Amino acid sequence: MAQPILKTIPLSELRISRLNMRHSRKKPDVSDILPSIRESGIRQTLLVRKEGDHYGVVAGRRRYFALKEIEKETGQTPDVPCAIMTEEDAASAIAASVIENVGRLPASEMEQYTAFKRLHDEGRSVDEIAAFFGVTELLVRRVLALASLAEPIRKLYAEEEIDRETIRALTLATEDQQAEWLRLYESEDERAPRGRNCKAWITGGAVITTDKALFEVENYDSLITADLFGEHGVFNDPDAFWKAQSAAIAQRIDAYIADGWKDVVCLERGAFFHRWEHQTRTKKQGGKVYVELRHDGTVTFHEGYISQAEARRQEKAKTGDGDAPVAPVKPEMSGPLAEYILLHRHGAAAASLAAQPAIALRLMVAHAMTGSALWQVRAHECASRKDDTRASLEGSKAVAEMEEKRARITSLFEAFGVRSEARRNADAYRLCEIFAALLAMSDEEVVEVLAFTMAQTLEAGGPVVEAVLHVCETDLSAYWKPDTAFFDLLRDKRAINAMVADIGSKSLADSCAGNTAKVQKQVIGNRITGNGCEPNPDWRPGWMQTPPTRLVEGAGSPPADSWARISGLFEEREDIDGAATQAFDQPDAA
Image 1 (cartoon, helix red, strand yellow):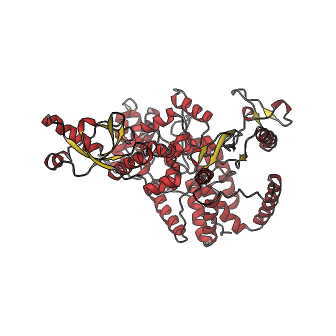
Image 2 (image 1 turned 180 degrees about the horizontal axis):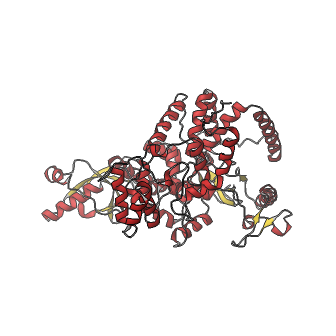
Image 3 (image 1 turned 90 degrees about the vertical axis):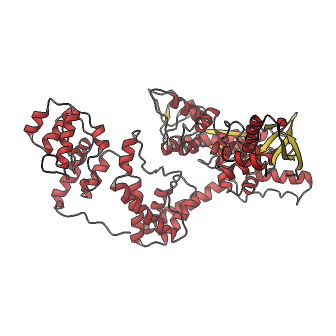
């Protein structure tokens, strides 16, 4: 930024600049600084720039509004000491506004996005923005990633209708996926995916529909399943689809080259094209085409971009500043040859891994923690809409024990200078970082990490949970007791009356049958606490016992139904092995 000119300017000639990052905010509270300004005046100059027939305040918005209050009180227009920037230096004006506001009050991510994007549009690169504000390049990239979002989605995020994890997942979505997500969000009958579910919804590639094909579907010689409830068919063989799709992509690349584009860069399948790391260039200016391949078969051709590094080299070449641009190095092998080499190396690695169970165990744990293009694993998270349910779970003994385990696992990885938090679908470097740390751990420590990772990724509900509770001989009474949230959600009078009979007696239940659910729940609560009777604090309804039982004959009961489906697998095995009376022996680690 050029050295500003110091000048005293009447308050009537000042306005809040549109480059001020808090331009559109409501009038601030200035009661804390008003007494000092009344007594001593402005001690720090306002940073302004000429904007038409007035001066725009870039930094000093609260001081400006404090002076407006004093003008109302006194009826006199004060003269204000200002530092005047040049009109051309818009990037520095935006930067100055962000620095002042962030230093005083942490800005929201959307405010940072607005400011960073303006700087980026003024020609500042990601690394320059990061260095200017003393933040990491990763933070700048994350904020600029919001540029890929549709305006309605950004508006929802600015209004705090979308949480941070969901918005970050949506930055990976194509325009069509964003439009579909908005449709689900606005629907009364369907629900838009949130958080990690949103990322899985965007990146999942298990189903490839026919609308993703760049080739003629009529000429496709493998099976296509018709979806009677959808608009498009589904490719049964993903490998055959990608073979045909790759051939069509190769034809499109040849057509781009023939049309005069400098280069066509085909990204690795699953890699995302980040617009904020590139600058636009026309075909005549040497722009390239980037091909983005999604696991769901979507192919997007981004026309007219070059990388930020290449743009800087071009700028230096124009101005004669620095060394001449380095010519790109031609790869030593063609694409098909590279594929051939890599596939043979993969085959050798797979065969070697199959013969090394101890190494395979550690690599499997690393995959479960970080994910890959072939591993879609994510931790369970409480998806309940009920605040009371979430609060009940957060205060439970099970969550406390998991947090203790998390601290233990964190300490194991920190000993090797590695962060242990699981980041699903992370890059290969992150996976190898975890793998290297696991190789340095003992078998016992690896099994600890494995157990915790499995616990994190255990799906809620269903037979698997019931199998684990049975095999682990879990005492559910140690982890749960009836609380306020449970009784608030308990509505079925048949089930409530069955609980009265269980904790009291059949005659007591019969005598209460005509009472309201509220009265019967109070009877259960009195029996637990011993109000007028012997206390029974260890009582648990059949739903929360191992194995679970249904309370109403013939009625649907998710835990009891799940156990009924699989009980024969475990009870019959115990009868054969004589294992019913002994604990399950854990096998030694590989």
